Length: 374
Image 1 (cartoon, rainbow, N blue to C red):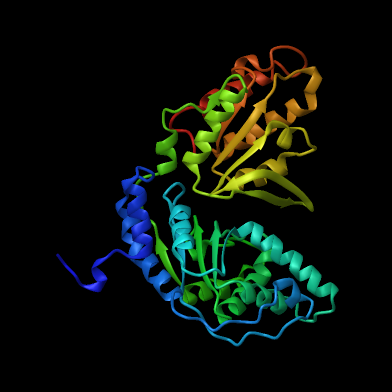
Image 2: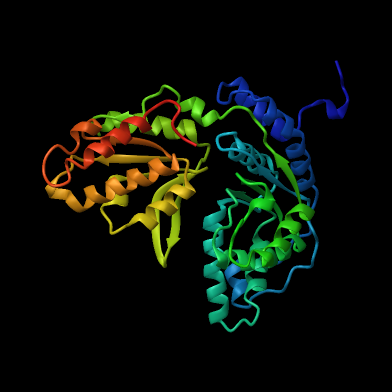
């Protein structure tokens, strides 16, 4: 038996293989090929770090505490590849294995909303340079930041993200992120994109860029041939969708998804790894329109929708919004998993709009196919 110290698996590899052995994960050669890089990153994080001042990031914004000395931390990781390949799962293993307390796992979009709120607070408190106190405040509380789904589409984010991350890196924060895009495709065709290009160079310099080039879409495999339309919308249906949620996500604590659209906030109660869950009235009972549903479709691969009622004159406005929602999901090839009062053809059988709903019912039937989705 090999007794060398390096013969035992690294911490991330050990977690991965334990889940495979327990039947919680299907082994994937492409995922296994990336594990050594993750083990090295966790080992680097285990090295002692100089403690910083115990001041929260709001305290930094408001001027409390002193700046931590610049001390670049271990090189981060930018993990990119197609949907359903297990990127978020691998990132979560890094978060779990990292032997430090100052770590955070957050969706990139939610993080940038927090940053924008922090910038507003810093400006209101009279800070001439709003980015630095926000970045330094984050760095004081965090050594490891794990971002899900780095995707820059908003010009407000694009214009600050480079300087924000430069300060985070210089203050010793290690970043691990997932993305569906290679760094050079971030903010592609965005307004004033030339101002964003230094951030791409920064990613290449301060993060190891790794492609998860798996041939298997594990998410589609889990859904192929399975039930995605549950009738009626009762506790049994909810339990079925709960089980699919557990299958498709690896988040211990799913977070709300908040999308800013033309100055409004569209919120879905639960979100993890481009999978979101909401009730029918969350999305169709509020004055939302095509732009809102388009933003939602761009952010998701799977939408779980609970409690679609019978439709008719009693809920005509909600029914019209549901039609727009389905059309948008259909065009974007977002997988819909839903519980409903009845089968699509019997949801809307009389009253104004019932004839037009036949097209929606047909689309809902098509979207139930095993091969549907991105």
